[in-house]
Length: 357
Image 1 (spheres, helix red, strand yellow):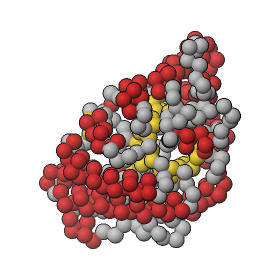
Image 2 (cartoon, one colour):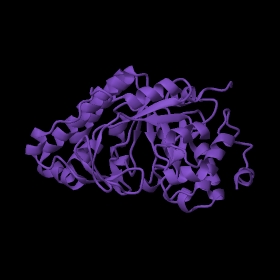
Image 3 (cartoon, one colour):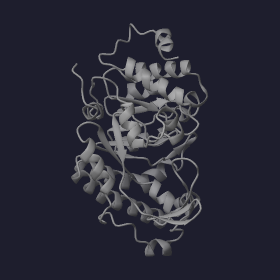
Image 4 (cartoon, one colour):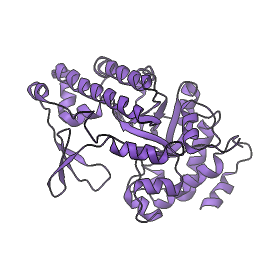
């Protein structure tokens, strides 16, 4: 097979086709890992210099600095710097129905809202797959109300949940239309629905409160011509059929801590969706040896690589505790052993391990 561009490679996978090789990219690569491998690189520079297959961007939202380590987002949450790539919300603007009725979300059409996206598309379109982070039905309600308030409202104040979901769906549909006009290649939504023990709400509550909005927002993404990678950590199996009914293109990260098995997912759903994941970032990439990382990466390729439709990555992100050498071992293994047609019969774990350890 002749070499593809990274953009062609990722889009082929999202169509559940075989590319020239298995692509790789991560939602987050912590700056400490980046600095160890590519000192001083921004995420954009790291993506280019390391040869990752997608470059990720998002709409631009203002932040108001409130003091050391504190800022108010344009959505109204007060965020505290956590030392990681994402802050922690410590104040929430919608804790009641009265606050919901008075709330006005950021304008999706505000001047400058898509400046970063326009720059990334102009620079990388056609070379790298350009992915845009939007949301679907859970993260924005969680941040606007706070997790505990939102969870209690599922039982005690359903009108509040419905209103919060409506804010998220309407805003993200409008943003999807704007980013599609600017030429992005795909959308990824990072709304987590579950912990390792199961969904945050019962399947019945998911169907009542989240499923209609999820259908609407995913249909709008597809109407804009945008393939969708849906992310959720944890054990999502009790609500998986509802998620898949919303016509996503790819599911991420097939969380091993949530009991999801890559081979089983490939067998059951590989003709319906592409899969992204799932080298264990809580254990193997953080505490394992490079030899163990190579073994696990090869196992993921064996389980889900045949026939295409696979993006190999961590099981969530490359967070600050991931060993830089382990991340590099995973990436080198993908590059060396992810070429199509896959030569599964001739593979030797010991040979791969010796090459990268």
